[in-house]
Length: 283
Image (cartoon, rainbow, N blue to C red; front, top):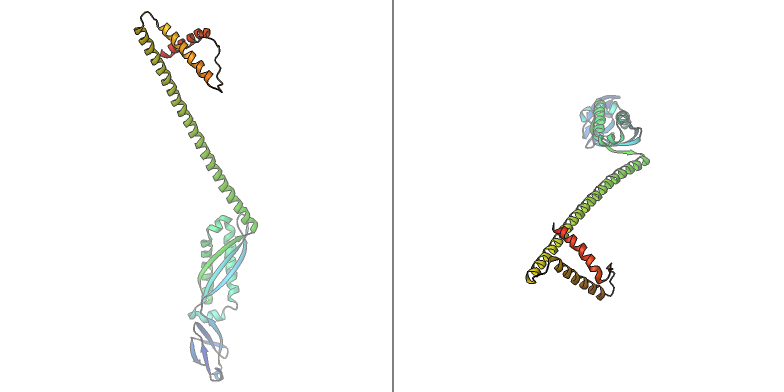
C-alpha cells in the first residue's frame, strides 16, 4: 500500500536504506517518507538501532592443558551515523563478531593456568572488547559491553579441583586439631606439676606440724613429770598410737590394712624407726 501511494514508514529505533536505481542515496530516519518508485527510488532494507546481545561458547585450552568452555556475551548495536556501512559492508554481523571473539579468547586463555583464568576473567573480557571495538567500528557497529560469563572446565576437572580443595581444608583442620591437643597436653602436664607441687607442700607442712606437736608434747610432759626423758615420752606416745591403730583396724568390718610385724613387742622396733625419721625430718 505504501509503495502504491509512494510513501514508506520507518519504525522507531530503526533506519531504512534508500536507493535509487540500486545506488545508495540516503538513510531514512523513523517516520513517513515519500518514495516515488516510478523515479527508481526504493527502500533496500531496514537496520535496527536497538541494543543486541550475542551469546557465544568457545572451547579452548589453558596453559596447564585443561580444556575449558568460555561463555561470552557481546552487547552491540549499529550506529545511526554509520548505518550505510553497517548495512552494506557486513552480510552476517554475528558470524563476524564470533570470529573475532574466538580469535582473542583462543589467544589469551592458553597463556594462563586454570586458576589464573578464573581470576582474570575481566582482563580477558577487556581484551575481547578492545579487539572488537577496533574491528567493528569500521563496519558501523559499536561494542557496548563484553562479558565473560563463565569458564566451564570438564566435569572430571571440577571434581578433582573440589577434592583438592577439600583435602587442603582437611589438612588445615588436622593441623588445628593437633595444635589444640598439644595445648591440652601441655596444660594438663602443667596442672599435674602444680598439683604435685602443692601436694608436696601440704605433706611437708603436715609433717612439720606433727613434729612441732610431738615436740611440744614431749617438753610439756617432761616439765610436768620430773625424772622422765624424751625417749620415755616418745615410747609412751607410740604405744598409745599403736593401740589406737589396732582399735581402728579391728572396728572396721572391711579393713584391708596389714600391720607387720604384729605384737606389742614389735612396738620398740617401730618406735626406733619412727623416732629416727622424725629426728631427721626435724633437722
